[in-house]
Length: 144
Image (tube, rainbow, N blue to C red; front, side, top):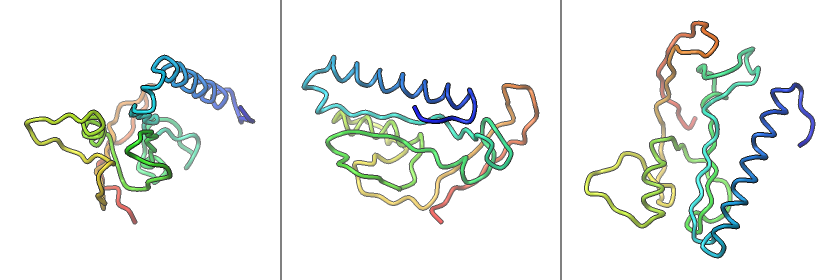
């Protein structure tokens, strides 16, 4: 797993190992059908680990808004795609991968299509698990 600075870091890495093991188990159970599967693995939403002397759920720093989405599908190809995407894009991605259509327009855009989003909304609420107060915010995350 490599070095960690505290038990929280170690626990996070062990959790990721469990995700890896689950993906392997699903792939093995699907056999050759796995080659045609579409896999989406969103990360934990904007956790900070002592950046800017903050921990936990979001604040409005850039690091808190860079949340990767791991995908694997024959349609996606290989490599890194740095386009701005968000949770709004997950449903159209699954629909496109399944070859499904819906009668109503769907918000969001599947990464299988070519598009370039210049910005995406971000927001946070004032709820914290430890009971401390945090100010809610809304904003726009841009490509610049």
